[in-house]
Image (cartoon, rainbow, N blue to C red; front, side, top):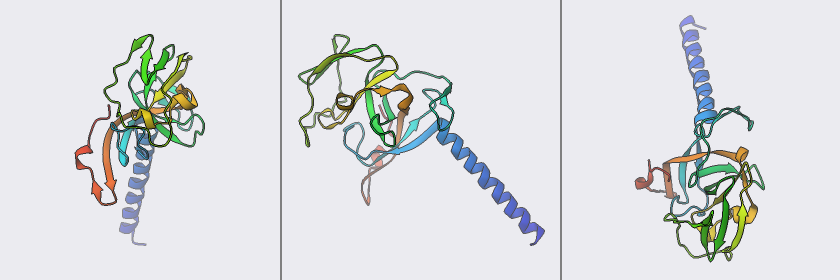
Length: 199
């Protein structure tokens, strides 16, 4: 082969390897893309939203493990997080954190209370239940150490901690950051949602 073409191929190969390493680094430590498949977080997140999740904000982990090597910050009330579903860790869920370790939670007539105080939740969708009667009363319960209580903003249509229990700290992948793309249908792009901050 012509030495000039050998050099060109070598340069392309090096650039490709570098790009793959960089992509692996970013996905492992910084941000990761996720797609919203259900309406459990309406109206905050729409079905078809594609979001970027900040993985760095809760600490740097060794890839493919739950071992944090550089702690950064801890999840806070109201954070919208992606986590591995406690009943099947091959699935990723996204919900809002309502209870942190040590919190006492209670729901009375579909109203949430935390540590005895009524929560103001302007993000709730208010949509009526579709598939099953929602659990509107429970507790009081205390969130154990290292655990979190997560609920959907579409409270009447969300499978969440009311039904399957707490989320372990090690199961949290990251905090939802921005919508980078949004499909309303096969040829219907929600342009107004692109770049929207998730909060």
